[in-house]
Image 1 (cartoon, rainbow, N blue to C red):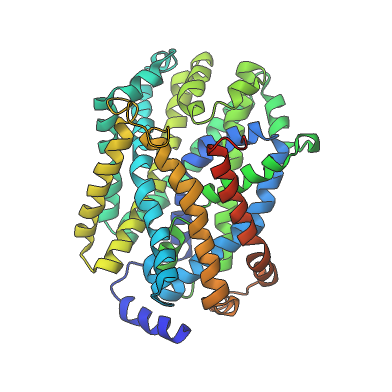
Image 2 (image 1 turned 30 degrees about the vertical axis):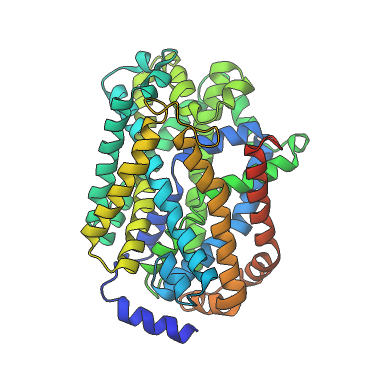
Length: 464
């Protein structure tokens, strides 16, 4: 089977986009991984599930489960030189392969539109902070009124989406890689600046202790489930992104080293996000758990109130939302790039034409999400607004199924030996024994737990 995929890669690699080297791949994947989930989702989950103990469980899972799936998807992408549909088809075209390839490909097509809606919210807040509207943004009801204003939300969604497509049209090296090389270092610097300011506020050290020091009395099974779900979301697993970016990776790039660098980058940003937000909330509220666990509204309602109370809220607000914007833009670029790459591979169309097709999908799905809290507020899917429904469908159902499909592909067809050979083309596979044991015995079980618990949570059977 490896002979077939290699010959296929020789035919297609000449026209396929490539990263210039390992650092281009690492920064592009880090840009994908470091997104909205890191900036607001990680801190509120850490606060809700025990602070330091959640952080410890997350790190353990990321270094095992996360590592295994990053290596798997990247190796399969580089092995076949295809985005997800083509990668699965390289091993067969029966129904299981059709399902596995397309579910990995469709996930980013559905996430991209509503992700760009939220990106538009971030851009709107950044512009307002630049205009000096810190007190207005902190006012009660501002965010609710804003997302109910369908015309305004649609406008910012379109602006953010156009920025994403401008980068995608430029190509892999000149667009995706170039933007990642600029924005990711800038994001880190801004995150460090906000985190340093946050931890030096009066009362903030209690928040630092809560976030970094594990308290085993706070441990529960839901800590593990929540940490698994966050790791899944944070590392861009089961979105087709790692298949696509792996297909752009040169055969001389060290997959294991690159994976380790992605792990470090993602962990570092998650830590910085926690250090930005949790100590600031402790300083502002004295550690009120209800404030800490505000969920997605933390970034758009709670934090503007905290920034406004700091005295230099405009400066901190600009820095935070500029960082937030960079994180949202790099992740959205990865999602759209994966979708465009799938269309290029399967339809054999030009890149601009594939971008146009993805643009149509963005307008249809994204507009429904943008208007779901305004003129379409009366329309619900399973009791959820459009944006919430697409988020549930992709993150809680489709992504676990996509990851299970990857496990099936490796265990039943590509083989653990085939993955090892691909990794060892360019590096020593130091964690091969752990990889083999975890993929064979633990990964499918962990993925199944995420799928069942997420659906049970939405149905009200369990509370997360």
